[in-house]
Amino acid sequence: MFSISAKGIYGVSAVLELALRQSGGAMQIREIAEAQNIPQHYLEQILVVLKRGGIVRSYRGAKGGYALAGDPAGIRLLDVITLLEGPLDVSPGNRGDPRLSGLWHDLTEAARNRLNRSIAELVEEIRQVDTRLNFVI
Image (cartoon, rainbow, N blue to C red):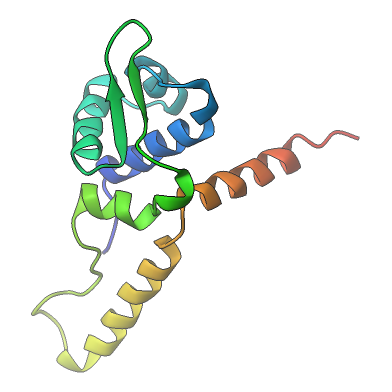
């Protein structure tokens, strides 16, 4: 079964949090961890990988922390997941019936297409959901 590990889930959550609070400047690891319920020690490791991959930037000093390295519209969800999880592939490898290879290829492509959207698009979707959930009569 294909699944995204905690590393990928937490990484996407951290990037999302940075995008949601982008106008507030850099966020400290503690703030991100608390906001997204991520173990702080694990988040530190994830942020190092995201920094090395050019997704986030770190700042030193009293007001230091992490921020997105670029515009959320230019950061793809697929890039974040691939950086943390490796190449996306739903195929069973050399196992199974080779006549099903087209099916596995199609599933991989469908997953890539669904994840090939920007963090800005994801933020907008979340804000729309939040707006609908906060509607009061």
